[in-house]
Length: 261
Image (cartoon, rainbow, N blue to C red; front, side, top):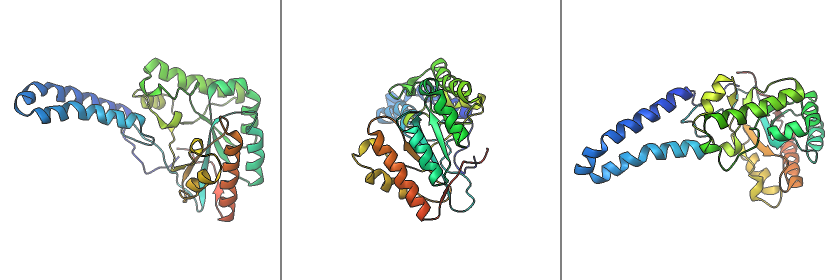
């Protein structure tokens, strides 16, 4: 997936953070005696930088985040998170086919294992299968250690491979939250981390109009658009995708799969 975003190595970013942290703490004793406020800043800044790059979606300080792709004309990439779900996936597949659209389905591993038939159905209809962690640990993925991070990545990839016979090439964490060990684990598995150019934020709305409008405002050639299926208000989420696809068709845009890295 072509991108113009940050491409720094994940290991280099983490090593830089650790070096700056150690070096800054060594200076604290002298600074505290001479410049207390500066000492406080030296103490806080590295932790603040790490916190921001861990919890802020699309932040790329810890590693490369793909937010756009190299489009050939009026093309966008539609990504759909949180499936598969028997209540939404079949209808979405029919909807995508009616618009001659392709999408990347970022699947949750436990759901993929439970609904292997839907995983195979998504692949058989020509769509991409992406890794969205095994259990979708939204509350604590930011503090996951190396073992838990690896299990979340591998569990989902294993479930997708067991269902459809292929391993995903793209990964997206829950809500864009990152673990400090995530980018190294992704690099070892040759997984590309995919963010987004625009998202609908469906959970903030009681109807489809707001999310559709937020997505439409971000439509540009090469944009990566984030929508959801499943979860609360599943019908609204399907209506959001329907509204977006109608707009894209009217404006002459195609939903395509991103090229290989």
